[in-house]
Structure formats: structure tokens, C-alpha cells
Length: 110
Length: 130
Image (cartoon, rainbow over all chains, first blue to last red; front, top):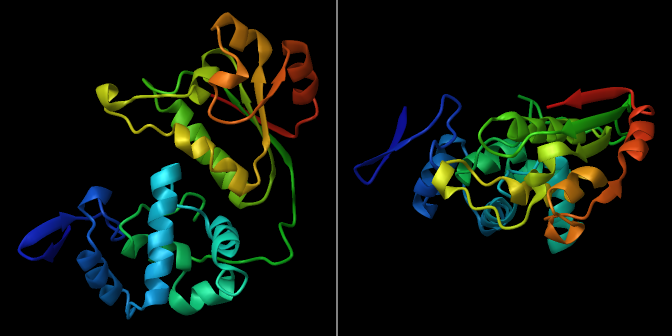
């Protein structure tokens, strides 16, 4: 299974997560978001970029509870809330945002 | 897949202890154990993580895994604090036998003697070893 972008094919698993996170590009994120029915805004990018930085530092995608807490610390209570994240990523923020950001599915996300 | 958010916290909290006894690479035990710890933490359980025998090597600073073609997952131990997993222990005898001190480790741990660990283990409700 693969995404086709600019004549290149990018492998993904059965749930749509990239097989090789190094193949991710912002352009591919746009395509993945569209698949998820999401129109990317600056607020979406803020979360995606934050997740990618988190992954870079800790080598895992955070569970939703941990993501909310970390966002709150960095951006304040308004953006560090479940409600805010669900508005941006209605089908599960950790799951959807990680997919769009090219990261693996969060551990502990059953 | 649902991502439920329970504002009231978990209904049942148990004392879980995860005992790491194996070196980080060469087998998948250490990585799988870390996943188990993260899952228990996601369910907001009372998690204790022990490193003993060759398991203390999992926390060694400066791991370089390109040569064995495995992901260096030692940075993930630093994420545990964000998961509210702060009860990390290393066995004193295991550290000493390998010439390690707490300064060699990627995260702060409480160093316990074998006897002290035994006492802590006896207080747990669930113990998983790998």
C-alpha cells in the first residue's frame, strides 16, 4: 500500500501510517490531511510541528493525555485542551495528527 | 479506535512493577517492556520500573545503535516523566558490578539494594519481568 505524490510512491501500513517516517514532507501532510477530511490551518500545523519535535526528542508519539499536557505547557491552557484538539482533529487528535505528521500510531492508543 | 478522555481519572489503580533484566538490544524484550510501561501509564496506573542485572544498560547514556540496525529507544525513557511515571529504580549491586553510577544514566533513578528491592516488590499487586 502506498501514497502517490509527485510520481513517487510512499509506503504505508494498513491503517495509513507511513512505513518510513523519513519519507514525510509537508506536501505529503497536505495529501494525508485531505484523506482525513481536514483542511490544514496554521493551528493544525502548530500541533503537527509540535508532535514532530516531540518525536524527534523522545522517539515516540505521545498519548493524548501527554500531548495535551505538553501543549498546555508550551502554548497555554486554551490550546492545551482536549476540546481544542478535537476541534482540529475530530477523529482523535493523537491518532489523526500523528498520521498527518508522518509519525507512528501513539503507544497506548488501543 | 476511540480516544476517550476520562476527566475523573481511572476507576481502578493498581501497583504495577515492571522489572527489566535484559540488555536493550539483541532481543526485543526491553523495547516491548517499555511499550507495556507506556500503556499502563496511559491508563494512569501506579507504575514502578526497575532496572537490574543487564537491564541497567538500557539506561546507559550515549547509545549508538546504527551498527546493530535497531532504533535507539533510550530517549523514550526521558519521556516517562511526561507520562507521570516517576518511580524508576536501579539495583545497586547491578550498577556496581558493571562499573556504572547514576551519572551514567539518561534519567534520574532511585538506587536500591537487592534487599530494599525485595521489600518494594512485596508491596506490588502485579509484577512483570523481562
